[in-house]
Length: 332
Image (spheres, one colour):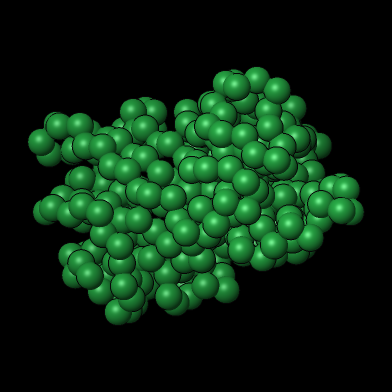
């Protein structure tokens, strides 16, 4: 078994199926390798799209491997065994006995992970809500969905295991509505549109995601509409139909309109280099204001797991994005 190094996050294990393992179930085969995981955890990795056979993502645990197949496993980041409560201010938009909705600040990691053991949203939530310590998952208690560290905006967090299960089911069934506002370079040719393109690990830069060929990634759909147009950028409404890792950022970069300030998907220095020299000083000022990708989860709607009522929430655009829009001579 060969371990493949990674630049920033996670690690990868690659193995070639020997003759005596041909026609074994994928989960059975992997459980008998030297992977540091139980069979149930391996099954979760498979269902989450973390295993590929001959570069094609396989999400069925019962897939039969063949002699000579190259099986690659993306190992999740190694996180601390548990999170500790920390007294960190939270912007709580709504709270009741079952759940709470928070407006996450840009720069805050959602849960402990490699390199981010403390000062996460989960650490703050554990201090605010003592009941979260009873969750089965000690690292991500109550977390229904995540936002990237440098994406701001609304998240729903369950305070009880049964509420978590019901909210997670809504999310899986695409009944949770999530709208984002993104500030992008340039402007799409159409005022409204849909990006329907599968997403998987970048073939060379494994810490990134990328649009990949059908069958080699997971289905991903993002709807967009142009909200306003500025000199060098535009403000978009973005609605998620699916929720893949870095989905909006990857899809907009694929369109040729990366999120302004995004250092991973071409929205920062690489994009500035393509701008005419006389226009760069003002745009450098925009990037100085935006120390992160200009992406904000502005609206959230779901059905309350106990009452059955629809709850809708909105969070105002943060000041850094407002300043960036003003510098780009637009309005918000």
